[in-house]
Image (cartoon, rainbow, N blue to C red; front, side):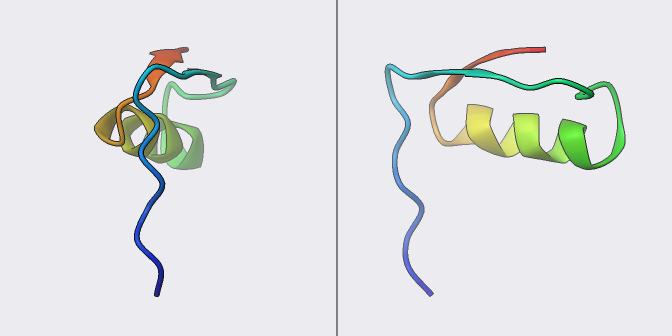
Length: 38
C-alpha cells in the first residue's frame, strides 16, 4: 500500500459531505492537509 499524498496548500470541494461517504472523504482530505469546502 502506498502512503497518502500530502495535500497541504490545496483546496477540495466535496459535494454531499454532510453525511456518509462524502463526509468520510471530506474528513480524510482535511486530515491530509487540504482546505475542504463542503
